[in-house]
Length: 121
Image (tube, rainbow, N blue to C red):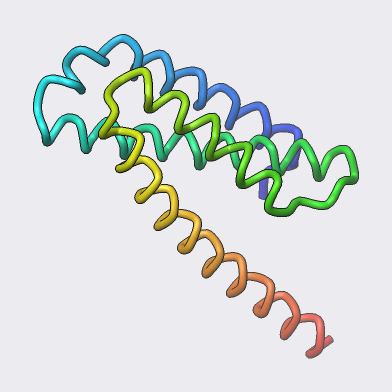
């Protein structure tokens, strides 16, 4: 498993690459309905990596991660989506909500798995 520092660095690098590519191809992403939806999905990936960055930063500083991190990461992703097309904002929000739901499911599974492992020992 990666440490918080390296995960924070990798998520920042991925954020930079994704945002750069999105801005380079924003004309293409705004050219049709399907590409506009794709632009929203790409922006939701920005949400995912920025949430990872913020969560790892808070863990490194000894802070508790909560809804503030989610709201900040979503705001960053929605601002990035707004540079492509207005519809990207809506699709980014919907894709981000779905990603957050799945992240929560995986997190709950991993916590319950580690708790059951700790009880056995």
